[in-house]
Amino acid sequence: MGNNLGLLQSEQAAPAVLRQLASLARPGALLLGTGMDPAGSDPEHTAYQDRNRARGRMPGQIRMRVRAGVLATEWFDYLLLDPHELERLIGPSPWRWDTIHEQGPKYLAVLRLG
Image 1: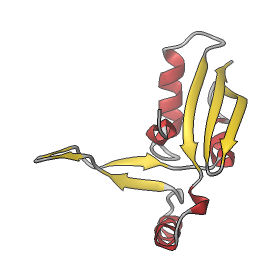
Image 2: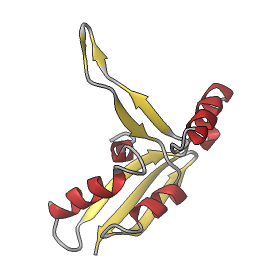
Image 3: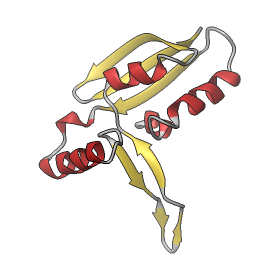
Image 4: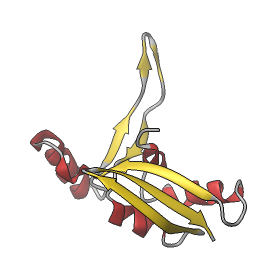
């Protein structure tokens, strides 16, 4: 596993992603998500985060695509967020905090379906 919380994409997309995951699970299910707090980034990334804020995006929202040789995906959003931002995003969803395990800027969040 590696930063799979990035698949929440953005503040706008996260509610739908969380609802879709909930529709596939039973009450009490656990959702394990790894993330990384972008706050500890180097100055180059800090400037990117400042531009995101100025554009109304989350600081750790990355626009990217994956390439392999001549093949490439479409551009998509990928989200780096701190635990407090994650807590805010799951607020309106059926998922609730269970536990969080932090190690430096990286963390594992365990969410439980209510």
